[in-house]
Image (cartoon, rainbow, N blue to C red; front, side, top):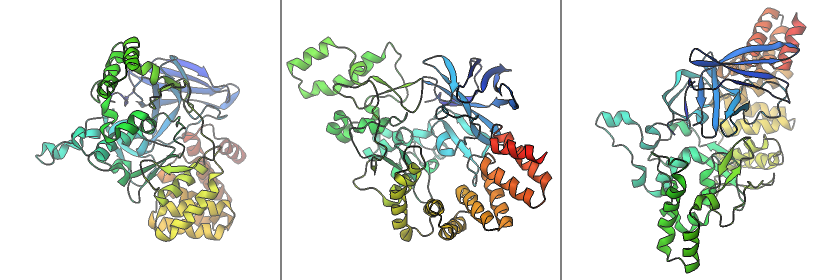
Length: 486
């Protein structure tokens, strides 16, 4: 955990590759203890350049992804290093893109699980102080609580093993339970969580209802373990720390004996049959047989240990049906606001458009209970806008912005509606505010440039487009509009 983020290391390996779907050639260049990413598409003189890489995330066990900063806003590099194959390739989620993905924002909830003392700037999506985090890697405070008060003679440090089971487990779940969708509680988020708190008071995780399916997301270890017979029969007496020491990781050579000891510590207490005793004596690598590596469906070139601890495991993750029902993890009944927002988020993902009707129904039902909830208002506004009901969408977006003035989605989408209704000046104001939260919002930038140009501000429109291309050099509509202005 202590190696999950930091400055670009001198040990970084130079390399190159060409992404087939986009035709873009990438080169990773070491320079003066740092690294830069060079990119070009042969035959396209508009797409060639360099970008300094500032930070890495990932322990390196499976690989590293890289972050770069433009004007204090953090974005994920389109290239990652995959340790198992010892190769550079396109970053997860970008495999089929035909253009260079250059504007994926790094939001605080993502950085939080890779670095200590994250320093986001309020009112932005991905703006940070410099440096963006105070401690490289997952530091002591992530599990033991803030140290400042302790040093001053205040509150004692938290020892997770001494907490009540739900509070103990919350510490691991903050980063190792993503589910299919994670929803912030009203007015709260993951960055506010402190060891000793109950995680569900800050964020809720939603998973597929079927207990036989295994989520292929790379960090859903807690969800997988909850499906195991070991956890179901042991209950609260079993936790992540039953098998893992947060302060020490066995080497590859030590691992089989180490984890065998953890397994037998429980199973030998259960008075095993003679057959089981013979099995234990014959096979020495419990984890290798019952927790094999399975290929991760969402991340190429990597594998994940199957924490379901199956008696006869499969070596591949199972795919879940696109319309599988969502439920709140760890709860007998799902929080309806959270469930509505989870369906709304999932409906935006490829292959999950069937969730849109359920999201719309649930959001409409919970709105009377949350009339000032900017997230509920914005999500419901989006569905009304998608259905062509612009009057209702306008009212919902406007209400959302009264309660959260920097709601990026509401700013962008309401600007689109205003522009269609010839309220161009108001649209321009909204799009400028949205770009203040994240200047990498390329569609909003192009919309702004078109609106400014239509009002006679050709020079200002060009400046807007050049900024758009600075944050996303391969965005076709921006390049085409800029050519049109010449």
